[in-house]
Amino acid sequence: MCIFWKYLIRSYLKIFFLSTFSFISVLFITKLKDIASFAAITYSFSKIIKYVIYQIPSILPIAIPISCLISSFILFQKLSHSNELTALRSCGLSFKKIISPIIIISILISFLNFFITSELTPFCRINSKKIYTYETTLNPISILKSHQMLKIKNAYIDTKFLDTNSIKNLMFIMPNKSTNRLTLFTAKKLKIKKNILICEKASLISHFARENSFDDLIIENQDIIKSNADNLSKYMKPKNFSLNPNYLSTKMLLVRDKIDKQLIKPKNYIFSKVEILRRISLAISALSFTLIGISFSIEIGKKRDKKKIFQASLLTLFILISFTIGKAFKYQYLIAYITYILPHLLTSMFSIFHLKKISGGIE
Image (cartoon, rainbow, N blue to C red; front, side):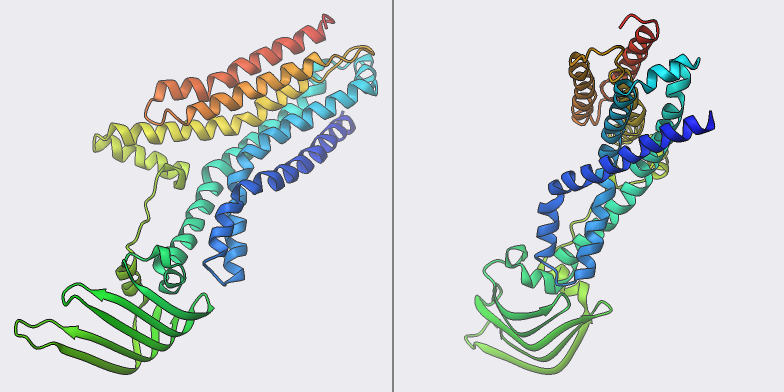
């Protein structure tokens, strides 16, 4: 029995890991736009690599269930075509005993997928958000690099970028609303070190508004100016960072759930519960898809029934479409429960019923 289990589990996992890697490669294309926009505003190769790594856990919760479907389908179709399934049954093994190692592995994968969905994905999502927010809204060098991100209208910038934390030959012209004049700021070099903005050879030419007819000109030269980098960032562009349930771990969602109950915030309370349902749905997808793959890949006799592939595809689409529809009902718990959980129960029951028919020799 131990050798038999090892053989099935090894064959299943071999296809599973190959499928998962393939799906990560394919689904990674959907993240290329975000990665390209991030790479365009930073010169730091290490930050780009870190940002790319943080995108992988958000792909895994979908890639893992589909890999489970492909692995179980290919494995049991191979066992049927090579008559290994017939040989196992002739040794006195029932379908229940044959599929039990794969079901146990799929349950373990479901727990793993729940951990990825509820803990790892939110952690990576919030850290990638932090990196992106810093480079786009908190790092003044990056803001200067991307002119369209500036809060200041009608500003002119001319500079040479050295890397993500330093520039040279900066010329910054902006309108002064109080005097209806222009203000000129120049600097030989501007760099950030430990969140401190260091400006070398800086010059400022501006105007001072007075009630009389005099037009006072202000000229100031400084060899070195030091300031907190966040101060300039807030002036050029305000912070824009907010957390929603997608960025919180399941433990934090449960804490937020209790707080929203006490504060009587029904919308936030329902949103947190629906997010937990979504994560549970993703987790149990591994088991549901494995059952679909097993039940519709087993073939008795030499006849190849293509109808089973069509049925397996329909059941898979049913779960995926229901999951997509469930995202639209963030504040309706009952409908979200039906769209997230009920499809798994129906497809699992249908798969088990189909397996019983095969076990009885009906198909």
